[in-house]
Length: 598
Ligand code: DGT
Ligand code: CA
Ligand code: CA
Ligand code: ZN
Image (cartoon, rainbow, N blue to C red; front, side, top):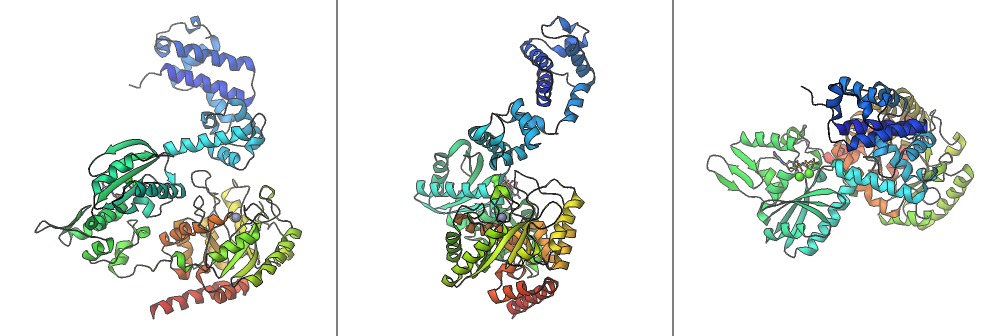
């Protein structure tokens, strides 16, 4: 038997219908009728569905006329209301979600739908972020900011947290905990954060202390803590602002190896490792390794000795995915993964000539401070009005300024541009303008809802341009905010290979684009990858660690990453015609590999 329809459900139905009619701009009388009915039904102390089923005349209820009464009957009998379904079909599919956002009434939803074409909460957030929302009537900057705050708070409550935010929270809480705990020796993130997953369910921290029992209470009393979930001997769980759960486990120094290994996971990795250990007569848990025959428990101060006891090399957390990493480890074939210090340049950087926050001179100085040997400044092209894109004239002036700065630096300063790929795949600068540039990165910034084939052809056309060195943040996704565009990634990567185009791993933590699995495919196909921060701010330069993590999860060594090569080799690649770049890159990879073998 199905549960009867509750009054609340009927109230919601009529409220939704009123809202949808209002968004559509339907008659005020009709809208009021549904609202009045909803209000009355909300006050009833008896089941409307039961009365309808019993054949009572619902029209004796104030505010319930013939039309409303029939819809209640229909809903109770069939579970549907045809008029409601018709309305829903006429409006964007997620329009009711927009109404759920505090601050969004039917009128503002209507304006957002009609004037900005917004069809989802993610698009609403984007519009609030880029300033379009504040332009709609009766909105203004303050309301738009409030809406943005509500959307983010809602997401924090419900969803996984994007890596960048989790990582910031982890750093902030760690610093506070060190201040609060004099005996704390080390605090190491474990779990999905240590594996650099794109999103984090909860933060797992391993504390090592001479006095482990003081750490849990110390965490629970930090000012950032909103709620204490578990307060036990083995584990303390709290929720901190902005709504992230933290699981803290504490131990003494000789327990770090086993605890860190266990709580780093992934669960799949641990399951496979446990099987592997069992076959050697050993069993694993968070306290150590037990010799099954004797029951003796061995403890480990670090992970490397834990893995070594199993006859394995230490496996980088990024690879602990429960895929083929154990086989690679056993056969001595773990890849030598790229590290931050391998990077010799950053090739996607913005200044305040477009939408960056810092003057070009300061940006260049900050990049030089990173110890880089080369860089490319890549402000936006003319078509990107919202980002203050450069016209060819301004670009020519910027090139002069950049060339004049070169004398002051050992670092090679490349004059670049992040050129918009227009909806039809044409570049936003003509070829003679592109030819002035040392480095062209081509990116999609609009018409993101194009059909898969159109989008694939659009990016392929950009790759076929002889001046385009790399494709920037190919999927355009923003974690938790904007879905990736739809394209045939295999076709794109094949074309990258054929045309000699590099693919960016955009390190901005909200992008991570290409994502790990796509970067892995690029590596397999021999497509050069380039790890860029896309910094709009000098602080952004350290985001490279997120891009490096993506590359590591994709099992990339430095040889797969174009901007790990010394300037001479990188420039030789860049200065050869595109048709020759793939062959050249293959040779670069081969010589790096043979170098590291010898
Ligand atoms: P998350 O939090 O959803 O982003 O993902 P994780 O991997 O951080 O998962 P979490 O926080 O539930 O647990 C952290 C690690 O602890 C997990 O990767 C493996 C280990 N772990 C936790 N519970 C179990 C368990 O019941 N069995 C095994 N084998 N491992 C566990
Ligand atoms: Ca976790
Ligand atoms: Ca956890
Ligand atoms: Zn950019």
